[in-house]
Image 1: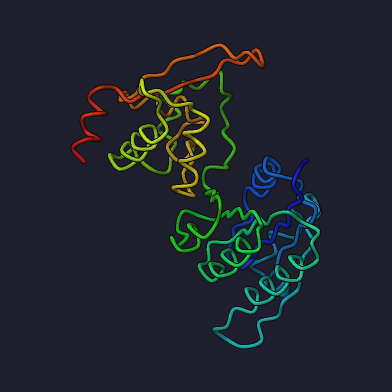
Image 2: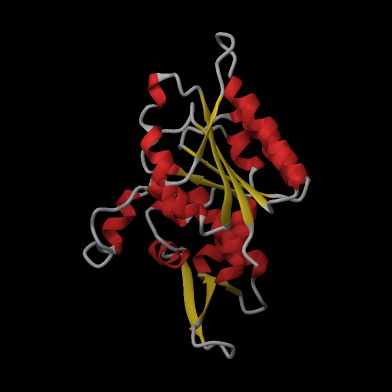
Amino acid sequence: MNSNLAVLIDGDNIPSAHVKEMMEEIAKYGNPTIKRIYGDWTNPSLAKWKKLLLENAITPIQQYAYTTGKNATDSAMIIDAMDILYSEKVNGFCLVSSDSDFTKLATRLREAGMQVIGIGEKKTPTPFIVACDKFIYIEILRKQTESKEDVSQKDKSKEGIYPITAKVIKLIASTISDLSDDDGWAFLGDVGSLLQKRQTNFDSRNYGFDKLTPLIKSIGDFELEQRENSKSRNKLIFVKNKEKQQKRNKKS
């Protein structure tokens, strides 16, 4: 059953560019039955949003800035989120903001059993990122002008917003170790799921790769093996730490 999602957007804190890509990404996780954006629509800075709202069926919620220095938009969005929670009409929330003020809201929604997906810019503070089940950076949602056939994976790796550091490699290696069988092999699907739980903003696209498989291949510290799947035609992919990586894990 497809989850119903409430998409709540902080219009004061999110750029209007790439909203189409953002909505396409959200659709991967559920059906966005509620789509609202909050802001002071008398403010000229929000003018770029107006056309996009009609194109994406997003409902604008007017929130006047009553006093200087106070973010009334945050309060309105939080109150609405709690009203939606108690209405029991959705299974999850997508909070679109780069503002750490929504950290407590994300935590509260998860305590209530809701799935919480965060979307924001790379500048988003860590507390809000880790308060979500999954956090996606807007920067990686930008449409690529070249087709996948015309761009090599090597070229794609240059488009990541983060470099592949020793810390990232260690995270992947330790996750494989924790899930591996007696021969050191782990199912790649399980590895991806655990990586997401351990680091909510872990996404292969952050490092310039569409999927986890090419990301792992590019590192060179891991072995990959395809196995037949008795339940479907799709082959299962397993991954293993190479001997040099196993030695590093033991030392650390």
